Image (cartoon, rainbow, N blue to C red; front, top):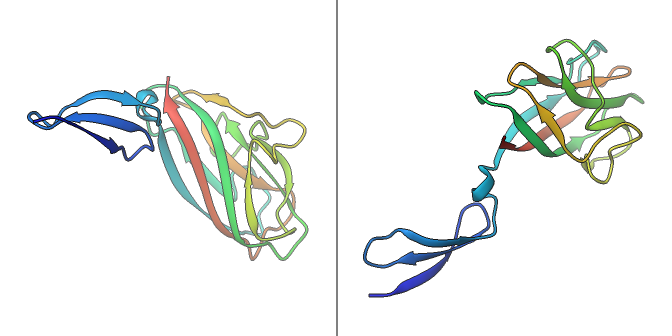
Length: 155
C-alpha cells in the first residue's frame, strides 16, 4: 500500500492513496477553480449584426469569469472584416470587451484575448447568468472557418 502521483485531466498533479483511490493532495491545474472550456464553431456569414458569427449563452446557473478566449481560425475570411468579441446583454448585441477589432481576413492562426485583445479587449471578463458572449464582423466574414474556445470558471 502506498501513494502514487498522477497527472490530472486538468493538467494538475494529484497524490492518490492506493487503498481508497482518493486524491490525498491536489497541486496545480484548474480543478480547484472548476475550470471549463466550451468549443463553439465559427462560420463566416455576410451579416454584420451583433452575434452573427456566434452567440454563446452562459450555460451555468451562476456567474462565470472568462479568463481566455481563443479563436482558432483555420480558414480566413475572404473579405477584410474585423471581428469583435465580448459579453453582451443578449445574442444580437455586439461587444468588444474580450477581443476588439481583430482582422479576420489576415491569416489562419490562433488568436486570443491576451495577445490580440485590441484597444478595448480585456484579459479577463466576468459574465452574468443572463449575458451572452457574441462574435460580430464589421463586414462580411464569408469563408471564415474555425472554432472559439472559451475558458471559464465558476464564480
